[in-house]
Structure formats: structure tokens, C-alpha cells
Length: 251
Image (cartoon, rainbow, N blue to C red; front, side, top):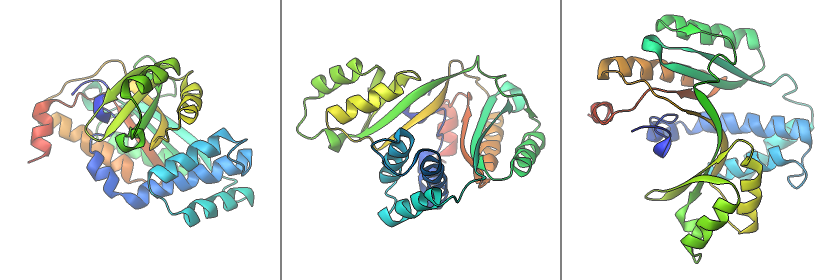
């Protein structure tokens, strides 16, 4: 599997990630708290909060949990939380970008550097991988949300809203936009009455690295270690997930 088809490059084990419900909730709670802290508690005037609430709903987060996270932000809690990004290389030249939120940057960078070193990788400087990854808006819409709508008309509306790609899968539709058109697509979906299950800015690799199964598993183990850190929310990479690798992982 190449590119960002079906989240292959950024969510290599969607089922496994979905099972980490508490981890997902922790990430979204931080997003809600920061959004409310920085922009207020009104979703109509705070786009960041509106996006975080939409993602919380997509993850089936209880309303009480969402409201509690927003109240924390409005009450001044989470004042020390800051978003962080780290870039580097794993073994065999695989590019890796690690994103998260932390209240202690020294702790987080030490943990990230330790994982890079453990797997014979190297932590680089921010911006060093900008030529490998493009930032894209990625919207996931459950097909049920389109009940009663004409799919061709919906696709035309999405293209009008800035969609670069509309990929129809078994149960969902994935819409990709440029970074600049992310907000326009949010508005377009609202206009046509479609609520996205998730809406994120993701880093999509414009080239991939193909390794053998054993080498690839080493990279995936490294990524898993990053994901186990409570401060880390997302890990992007440009490892090619070949059919051979996916077959080996399913054994």
C-alpha cells in the first residue's frame, strides 16, 4: 500500500489504535482544553474548539467528558500544555515525525530521543523533513452520513470546497485537501449538512521507503514505542506498507 491510501502510512494498525480508547481520549481531552483555553468556550466563534468537539464526537467521547475538558481550559487549567513536534530518522532512512502535547518539554524530548537512539535512529531538527511530508487536511465521513444524498452531487460539492481526492472505502469516505483549503472544506461540509467523523491536519509523505519484512517490523516497533508515551498523540512515517508486510503482520 502506497501513499496515504486508507491511512496506510500514518495509521498502520488502525484496529490496534482504535483499541487504545483511553489514549485517544487523552489526546482529544488535551485538544479540547487547549482550544477552550486559547479561544473561549463558544464553538461558533472558536474554530479550533469546533474541530476538537467534532473529533470528540467522532471518537464517541461522552458529552460529560467533553464538557469537563472545556471547563478545565476556561478555568485556566492546562496552562502549561504546549504542542510539540519532533523530526528524525529511523534505521534504513525511514523519516519519522512525532507530534504531541506536553506540560514538560524536557521530559518529552528526552523520551523521544531515547526511543530514536534505542532503535538506531537519530533525532533531527524541526523542519528537516519538510521536503518529505506535505501537510494535508484529511476528513473521514461515515457513509451513513450521506443517507438520502446523491453521491455524485456530494463529490462535486466537495471538489468545490477544495477536495484534492475523494476516496470511497467500505464504510467511510476519505476526503483530502490542501493545508490551505482545510477551513474551506469544514465550511462546505457544514453547508451541505454532513458531519465528519474526524477532521485533521495530517502529514502525508510524498515518497516512501521500501524495506524487507524484518526491517519494517523494527520500524513499526519503534513507532509503537512512541505511541505508548502519554505525551505523544500521532506518529507519521514514510515506510512503504507492502502487501508482504501486511500479510506478515496479520499472521
